[in-house]
Length: 448
Image (cartoon, rainbow, N blue to C red; front, side, top):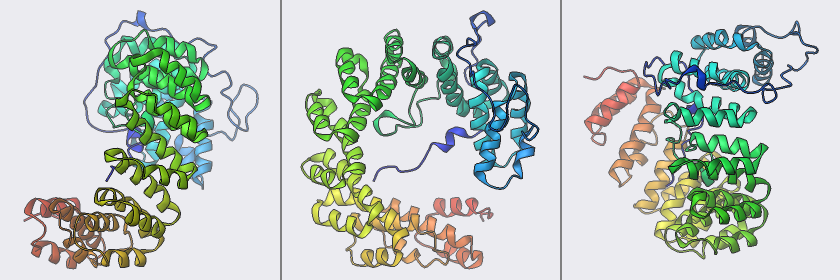
């Protein structure tokens, strides 16, 4: 089963006390050149304000905003606040975020550093490097993207001279089509550059070396593909291997949304080692726009491609009708397909019809398919508070999956009836000593 954990929000964590500074640049001030006045935001006027001054109703700090009812209203006020700041005022605003609750700090930090980087990117980076410790790495993608959106060449020059500062970027895994987590600094810059000047972005990519060259080309081609995937494919053909492997996936993802037949024909012309991964991403897009066609196509594949495409289709189906999706999985999938897909279907089924999902599980024989379904059920069954699913968790045949499922069910029980749950945990012969101690520590209970 694919890893479906969402990692995007973790990239916005700030205020950590870890005192590890990553990649101080050590570059001389002479290497720094502020973005041109033209490429800075030329219309940083808060909503509801007119003229050059701050409107009376515009807040002066986060404290002025925190009590505002409504998340949307608070976000708009934050945008107004940060859009109207003088570059010299951002540091004080950033310092105010350290004492905020975690969830508020995430949102405010993203908006603040995105705005700060538009007008004073060097100051924003200095703050991330010198004041935030290890957590500074998590705001650097935001800083770099905002900088590139307003001054792509300036961001590119700084990146090339200070690559070590951005070494953590690209280490969070990949998203479908090379998007999301996993983008290096070069990919982020070229993607923003391509929105303004695609040819310029591609030209810059060709000046780079190693991984950066392919990543930058991929970032630019992915943006071109959103508008004209056929043109992106033609550009990729010109670049050849220099275009980067992930560019194939990006183009397939975007093209499949617009014209499946053209996408499939193009994929069939790709180098053999690129076809399956491009087709996998194309099927993922097709499953969103035409689930019936995606289902038909998935059944024509073989091997790992079939399993991946089968899972994508099952997941898309389950969002609308999980029981129907499960029927499709069990009727059309082989053992590997089924084991890959049932967990994705169960993720949705628990929320749509808990009793129906339980009834289906009870009808299954022990084995890998049932193990995946039970584990997924327990992970997503937020209504369970009394340990009633523990017997089902204990029935999982795979040792690792059984330990994980029992741990989740027992932890939820601890939060609602600590005495009863503790009695079970301490007497359990399913949990090993390591799992038992980890569970108790997580719940804030001292181990014996």
